[in-house]
Image 1 (tube, one colour):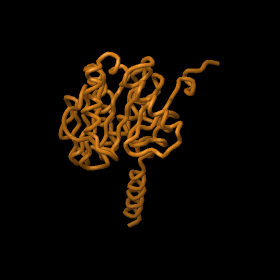
Image 2 (tube, helix red, strand yellow):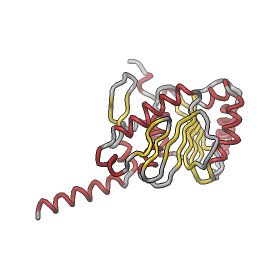
Image 3 (tube, helix red, strand yellow):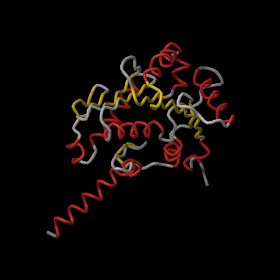
Length: 237
């Protein structure tokens, strides 16, 4: 009897923790670091800041190696795992990056989940750039998102896309963005790529809204800035 009660108490405690997204992000997922080592994903300072200040539409000007791409994709994987019928998509700026994102961030994180969680939410498809779960939620990674309706969209290195592939950038603006209905989530992140182009104009408009101090609507992009000098790894004694 005592063992049964203890097991039930542990199960209730785990269930309560699983209802906390921040706990899930800091305890369920494994990633590989810049040295290729398998490590538990833990929110760093910049990732915590983005999680706390997240809006529906987010434009993110960032330094390199802050883990923004990893965080956004783990965040979207978490939303797919713990919500049914979610559609999430990632647009990489080339095919090589798309393959690496899926292999090293989405597939790796899912494959290394606790066995009890994978058993509860098995993958119906887990290759060719798509993870489709039993709960009918899916996360796709490619170089475009031409079809379907998305609840979550991540555009990686949009500044590079605007500079190298202006036609593709136009397709993202007119196609992929419109696949995400108002009240859903878009993350557009990039390092700076000069003082012109679509990403520059997007950050310029979002900064102007921020400076104006007016409340944002769910059709407005919120500006997030993560400079190199805020990260301790860029500092020397």
